[in-house]
Length: 248
Image (cartoon, rainbow, N blue to C red; front, side, top):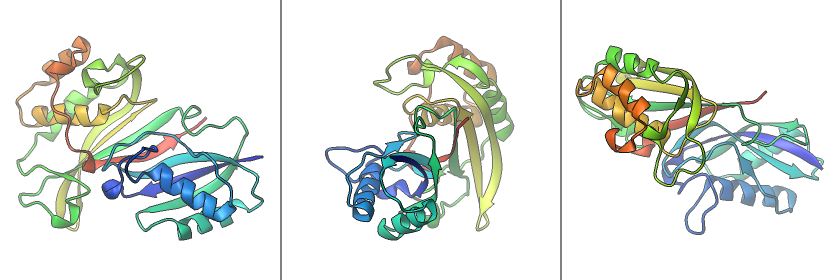
């Protein structure tokens, strides 16, 4: 048996999420169907991160144990040819037998895009959250600096979160950018792992900071208080991207 890793890109607009579900089209379901068509074998795909409906990925990772003798390059090209237009395998490679896309990962990088134009770009309506008002980027970055390091992120946990809510954040910053002349804000957060809806809850609270409705000290106090009821709203998923997953 070989263990094959795949780096996957997808537009999450028409997916019910990444993980298999009883009802709804999923990334895992499409991958497993394509794999069966390629190899005539039913195998389970293991994904590095669980993404919700509407969330996109540039660097999702999966692994699958297989007896196929096809080389990694052939697997990458063949799967992409079989898969629907909104998902592609960017890379395939052999990994050790103990590699697991989720459990072996040591870091995940997410990006949230905000369309900060006065008029929303129709081309970005499924890929960035539109916020027409000007946001205080310096204040947002000041608040994000408090996320760095190891903290209990319970204040930003989604309903139904199980297990420890302690995570280690490696990167947290906001920077202006643009696409086709449309002004955007890119909010980047990297951590060893993420809680359910953690990035969307953080960004929802950062928008309050950017509107000067919540100060940097208040944001830091919220993190320490670990009370989800005091944080901002869970914002829509369509501006969120899983950019990359890092392994030892």
